[in-house]
Image (spheres, rainbow, N blue to C red):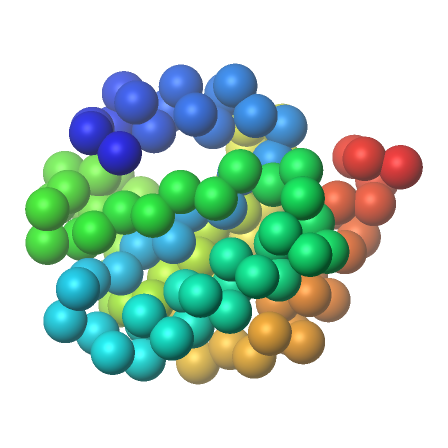
Length: 106
């Protein structure tokens, strides 16, 4: 992901987008990132996953008001639907995704 404009294009171009804000230095974030990717690939294949390194993309991080890592922001039809920050479980994430995803892709 290069810049804010590219991210906006991705959000607008996809019915559903998940943006994972993190940093290389967060070991917990690395483990969780893989699990989130697996969840999306297995249960929600129509969601576009995007990774943003907050150290390299400070303007984007500020634009989306990211204050802690990891933060996962979901967009449906180009609008922010919800976000999860820091401590969240995969089952909690699944429950948050299932309703808007089902409405959009069923």
